[in-house]
Amino acid sequence: MSASLTSLAPSGGCAAKYPAARLEELLRGFVPAEAENLLVGLAPSDDAAVYKLDDERALVFTLDFFPPLVDDPALFGRIAATNALNDVFAMGGSPLLALSIAAFPESLPNETLAAIFGAADEQVRAAGAILAGGHTLRDDEPKYGLAVVGTVHPDGFWAKSGAQPGDALFLTKPLGTGMLLHAAREGRRHEEGLAAATEAMTALNGDAADALRPFEPNAVTDVTGFGLLGHAHEMAERSGVRIELDAAALPFFPGALEQAEAGIRTGGDRRNRDFAGPHVEADGLTEAQVALAYDPQTAGGLLVSLPADKGAVLLATFADRGLFIAQVGRVADGAGVALA
Image 1 (spheres, rainbow, N blue to C red):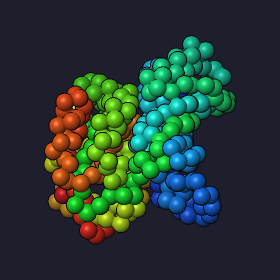
Image 2 (image 1 turned 90 degrees about the horizontal axis):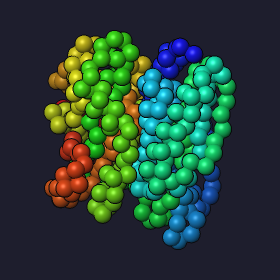
Image 3 (image 1 turned 180 degrees about the horizontal axis):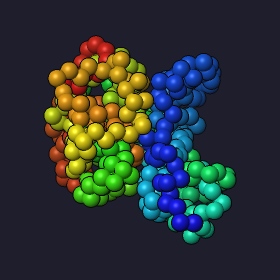
């Protein structure tokens, strides 16, 4: 088959997520399960579900899959696996077991599918887990991802609902994956930016989570399809606080701002604005800066809220380990998200 993977999908990666605003409305009709040991479910929802087994162990369970965002099948499999595994790391857990979720046209060569599965298996192993099987359907639009089970101490998981006034906010990967990938599909490739974004999208958040764990953060989430502002809105709303982001401190991949200034936007941009926009103040900023804050990320970094007096040591710890981190804002009394 000569067609590229991305030509078979109208959108790829986390930009293909269902609109967050409609998803909230849909899930509002579900009655949360009344289970004593369900520590995290739909009320409120988080990056993964958490179920207590006993006083020492809880399961972390998540799934994530999407259409291809790159043409290289091995790279697609690696990014998709990273994105799913990172949900477990965002909850403070350790991946244990994964199953493939796959849908492919029958016309795709076996070599293409084998490359996707093989790269995903390598990434699962790198995360310390086992890829033990899965389920594959016929579909004209390719899709791949994982269902992942991990473990965490019942008192040690991280939720996005615990941010406290006085906390500092940190981000462990730059922004702009959606912008750069979409620009490339439109013939505006920025090679340095794409290389940096690709490296980040295949970087598991396990090392960042390990460095963060001793600091006992108040709230953590990973920044993916709803963009920085969408995930910041979720953290602010569920924590009952106001999140103030420093636009000048936001880290971007090389070329991302240039693409935003050229008018490049993904389909996820509008959906993310519909979701978070009514709760966001972004006065005095350029449209390009705002667009990057709404840009849907794939396998993005952790957004971390922890007491400000721990910030300097956290930054030094990440630097000592050669890990990226940027201080991007603060948590205050009030509601909503401010980007200034």
